[in-house]
Image 1 (spheres, rainbow over the protein chains, first blue to last red):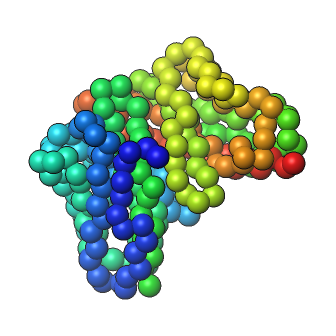
Image 2 (tube, helix red, strand yellow):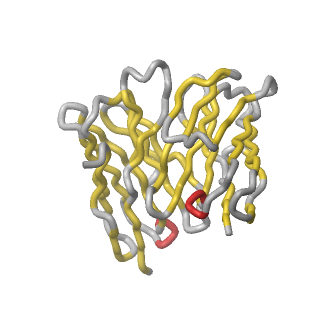
Image 3 (cartoon, rainbow over the protein chains, first blue to last red):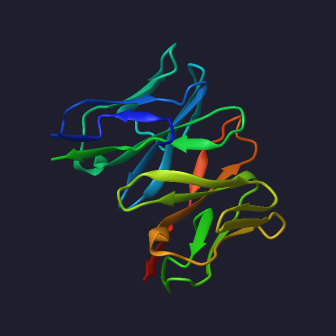
Length: 111
Length: 112
């Protein structure tokens, strides 16, 4: 158990819908990262937050957004969903040693 | 060309064999990570290293910064080592971000 929690574990939704994925980092970790893992693209970095502020952006679509709240949990919002958004979404957190601890992931299926 | 290349893509071994997985990268890095992903999907961080060598149990990771190359070794392999092993790098000069760039992974199957 990495100490990082993600909810929900599985999500099935229809095209055009909007979903919210939630991540709680390890106690004390200030950084949260979001990654997408699809069959054709592999693992890709989406976005990083540090202590509530956006620190870096990767290959994140405009339809996707994220935020980190004062209690350090983070949410990834995916809107106008398309079939190609079906993937595993991982959250990771890190502290002062910069080692990243991954959550169990949310499997999103868009039908 | 991907920034991070792993080889082999697939690897099948017999229990007890010594395993080596290789990772080459083309950018300057501040650190390199080895991750393990089990069939259920969960990802575990095995090593983070920026120089030299690290060892945890039967796993050894090495990195050569000048050659931009890292290896992950598994000694006395066991069927429970069957998983996908992923190499990921943190680039330098990223404005303080530790975002990772991933290789495509090496699928290891260890047969009893």
